Image (cartoon, rainbow, N blue to C red; front, side, top):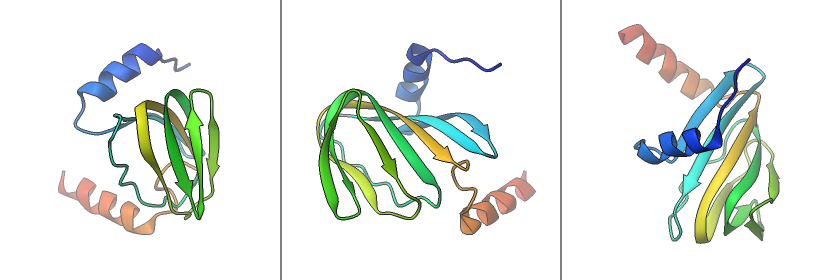
Length: 122
């Protein structure tokens, strides 16, 4: 069994150079913690996998395709694969649980190719 404490994940994500910390990865799904500060710019690009966002803490708006809506603690958002999306107008620090199915980058041939080349160099 793998088990995680949110406080430990938040601390690890906060001290990394990235806003995203993947902590579960299986072929069928991956899960990560995404953190954005109030006023931050979310520069993510569409993913090749379906996603679910669960807002653990914070307040913002999210643009999914052509639709924008407010989100806050407790909101759950589904984003289909390859749909443009980003958080914007972040008024309170966001802590977000992110689920990808299948695992993030599974359907991204270019990313998989880059990983293979990188692993060959090691």
